[in-house]
Length: 240
Length: 283
Image 1 (cartoon, helix red, strand yellow):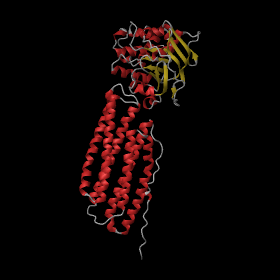
Image 2 (cartoon, chains in turn cyan, purple):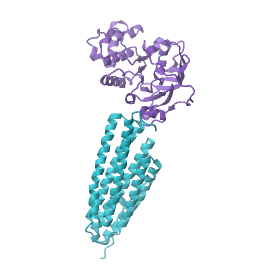
Image 3 (cartoon, each protein chain N blue to C red):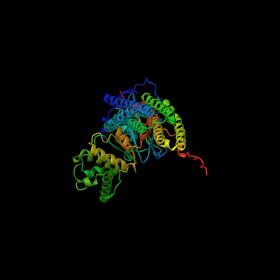
Image 4 (cartoon, rainbow over the protein chains, first blue to last red):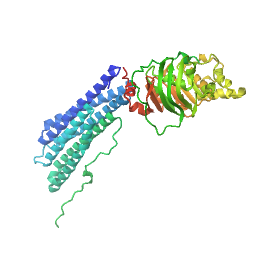
């Protein structure tokens, strides 16, 4: 696309995109660090991660303010308008991702005292890596305005959903086996749920990228594989 | 009226470039029935061609906006609809324009009557050098639309009310029209056009000379008028076109590039030229 006659308009749009990319980088890092803290029982890393959320919040405010100012100043239309709206929506999704990662880090602090291992941690690790890939891919798709890449992320979310369902069931069995597992497993369950939510936000970003590039919203229903809402526990029969 | 002859002449188009096959027309299922239809309309100023095979349907009881850079032919096309181009020496119009399916260039059609049915409001308000009352009464009197003073008083009051001007001038109808503010003068000109019961109102940049508040009042008036009249507005303000119109046509170098529902044109135009113009990327 050619440039605006008024160059400051282009500079403002570019600045908006740069801020989103920077915010995305922070979000990727806090997710990775939070999962590591959980896995390794690293309280110090967990605390640093919790504090790092502040930068993400600050960037969201900056982006929102700039977007609102651009709307007032420039009355953007067509693709420019979609850029500004996309920036607002994506920054909101990234801010939520940051919060969810912060919550995972808080769980890491909570399970510090757990001495035993919980096999579900491996599954959560794997899930987190997938979510990190999703986040990285969708941010790349944004930078490149690549709709196909965004759609791959959109479709892949069902993988995360399936992983979560499986971890959910796994943790239930641990809790049923031995009540001493309940505290640890419950924290891990929340952590896993947070990762699943991060995946959902990544698909939101993918949908926004679709809208940004195509000029119309994505109407399809995303295939969902999170069956945890319908999962029932089969309690072992008591011996009478 | 003098404005047609002093109006800006469009830039001579470069006829060596390849002409596109026709405008992108985005249909609108909610569009009202067509009031004014143009087919393959071309306009020449002497040897120079200013409009190239313009075809467009203008729906009734709604506002259609023409946008485009200076010299693109939008005002030229507007002036075809009430045959104001007839008054320009050397100006030649080809193609068909119909009003309610009747050819406006039919020799049996009374062009004076046409100009009552298709009213026009210009960029610079141009009230007659007469009283406010006489500004409104002049047209109906000439067309024999009112018998006697009581009827004329009613026509004048109705027109001024419809133009949102009555309350401001009812106590000074004998004052000169030129003594009003710019915004009031423009609304007086709109009232004057309405007084002869038009079906179509053409507006050529009606708010260019007005301050923001007067502009807003005229836009409010346009919103009300569209319930009863077919309105075509030429405007340089993208935001105004987006605010007041239901359908927008983008003109460029004497050609209609794209026409469609206003919300479509301003959120997701199909043609790159349309997009570049509305986003301020035209070099």
